[in-house]
Image (cartoon, helix red, strand yellow):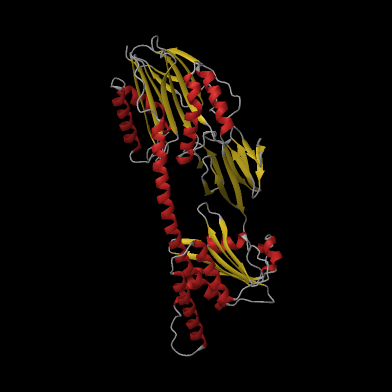
Amino acid sequence: MTLRLRVVSADGRRFEHDVDGDEVVVGRSSRAGLALADRAMSREHARIRRDDQGWTVEDLGSHNGTRLNEAPVEGVRRVRDGDTISLGGSVLTLEIHGEEGSPSGDSVIYRSAKDLLQSVSGSTDVSGVGAANKKAEGRLHMLNQVNQALASSISLEELLELILDRAFVHLKPQEGAIYLRDTSGNDICAARRSTPGRESRPMHSKSLLHEVIDKGMVAHVVDSSVDQRFSESKSLMMSGLRSFIAAPLLDAQGALGMIVVGAALGVRSFRDEDLELLVSLASVAALRIRNVRLVAEAMERQKLEQEVRLARQIQVALLPASLPPVPGWELHGGTLPSRGVSGDFYKALLRGDGSDLAFFVADVSGKGIAASLLTASLEALSALPLEGNDPPDRICEQVGTLLFKRTPPEKYATAFLGILEPSTGRLRWTNAGHNPALLLRASGEAEWLKSNGVPLGLILGARYREGDLTMAAGDTLLVYTDGITEALNPEEEEFGENGLVEAASRHRHLPLREMAAGLERDLDAFARGVPFHDDRTLVIVRRSL
């Protein structure tokens, strides 16, 4: 039995993951078999394993637990095809494929689409008057018509309707459908047609889709009622259709989907020449569909790029142009987005009469435009609480409650909030599920200000604790996001907290802007060309007097 996981990640991405072997560990770590950038997920969250009886799921002591079909997983639980596993903010849908038997007799015949297309292409000589030559001539005439019709500039919907129209004219089926595979690997019925007076029904069979699209086979189904692989398709059985031919929409880059036509046995029985005609039509149609998609994708990409540029402009406007000057102190802040717009956010302001400095660093769940929108919400929701006189733990409680009530459940933010009294060096702070802030003492000793609360917006009514320390002259505090410590090199090793301590210590005597630039150079040298997959934000606070 093979296992495919249909994944909906915490940031809304959809993709498929085929399990290679007898088990896969799912978690936040880059070393997990299925690694997901999900803050609510443990580094090694759950294990899915195959045994003699099938597949099982086991929680690996995660902080937030694992749920199977919304029920908590305790111990080892057996799973079935179609089950859902929820962990963190991500959902996995299981697709389990058993060992399929061979067709019963000659009820279903599968052939290589490429081989059939080559044999058809080699029989295009129409000299003479034989029956075979007349068939070749008819096929060429049809393909000529199709090529001319499909050459016009039309939408994808119009193109699919035109393809079905040609199939109905030349093959005379009762039902026809075109399935297209989307970017998430789902096979969608993009167009469907039936003869007048007949109710159109879905012509859906997982077995047929798998053989035709995944394996690149053409299918000639003589009688679907005598083959067990079609027995699970209730809609197919209810349709009364028994005879089918199907061909993949195949081009040089792979299968885009399939075209299938069918009829009741008493109405129409398809022959080999019908299959040859369909595979020829599918080949021409695939090229046109690919071209239409490329044009549509280019237009969509251009539109998205414009939206990203606008979102970036808006987000830059939300970030402080400069940090407030504080006598006796140095401040520096900056962010580098990984995807044009950032899911990171920081701000600093003098509160009340200017006796206190508040600084706030946050990392929202997800990436890209969706994360930037959540960042804008966080900036608005935190503005008023930060300007008041409340301590950091109380401010986090207020912001966390507002974020929970005004955003979807899977949206949250880790954050570090510091309230500094510049005259004394007293720092009161709260860490809401964020990376531990690094305090470099003037002596060179490193201290970590670790988490003392859950991420903002994750739990309604969450309470937070306050930390308290005093910064002396020469002490430097670095507040950062995990895009720095979780940066990878070609060996998939993380920069890590040790790397940050070493780099910060090496540059700690420099002015803060130069210190930040030195850290960035060290990070680039460590990564050695590996792209940064997460935003990087750094705020540095140093007491100079």
